[in-house]
Image (cartoon, rainbow, N blue to C red):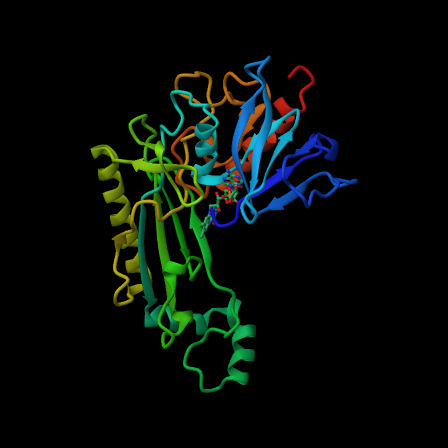
Length: 332
Ligand SMILES: Cc1cc2nc3c(=O)[nH]c(=O)nc-3n(C[C@H](O)[C@H](O)[C@H](O)COP(=O)(O)OP(=O)(O)OC[C@H]3O[C@@H](n4cnc5c(N)ncnc54)[C@H](O)[C@@H]3O)c2cc1C
């Protein structure tokens, strides 16, 4: 968590904010929400009289160590990859599935230097002629027929049946794709193949009551193992990537085909999954946390199936559904 933030929505008007030690409280005015940076939500507290209803959130100012209780009618946890689950745990909301069904995307990576014939073929391609003529007039000694400000390639192939991985070919979209300064960036493309791993309850993130992270929240520990089936599948994925690279060129020394460290894809999901069964999910299909009346959870953790694509739009879609079908629904 680089910078904790806490968002007060229109359901938490200023009069509903009950400052304990908070000295710089700002009125909400006509704003629909306020982002309070450098605040951490320590826990959500249930109403003593209504045990399924969250009454307030305990929010701490990380800079000053002061704390306030935020009262609202509805609460949404959107703490990102793992910290949403952590906040549930810290609030003593610990359904059986919390942290379980954690999955991520094994990542195969390499960098390819485009072959000479591929580069030279650009000169013959009429689609690029106009831009190339301008470039060559400006830079007659440039041996590479690619304008200096040409946009980086951004190509992808989605998952399909018989090909359960997502392929991305682009240039330097991730820090791992950095190349040495003396390498002409126009000649290098990065290959990223994202695999999928079935969600199983054994793969999980757990939280500790005893140990804490640097923010004083329950420390997370990851337990993750690929089944043989998925290890084989990921092996096929690596082969597929190698096959594709052969069409474009040779490997950049040091960036040979490899699996990246687990977690590199930053696409973990499943650990606060939605579903129909409270035993195997943390929230219902509208992201409302089981056994609560006014608490919803958002983020990639809600995704309840193995995916190999970029997950954020799916998380956004689930959030929109939660708002339309549950938070704003008259019978909720
Ligand atoms: C380098 C990188 C590249 C990525 N590229 C892509 C991509 O191309 N496509 C894609 O789909 N996804 C990508 N992702 C993943 C994407 O960033 C996440 O899926 C997305 O940001 C999740 O949004 P979120 O709002 O759920 O969580 P976050 O963006 O993580 O926001 C959660 C916020 O909650 C705060 N928080 C947590 N706990 C507390 C607490 N207790 N109290 C107060 N605040 C708290 C955190 O500090 C954070 O500010 C990438 C991620 C990284 C790091």
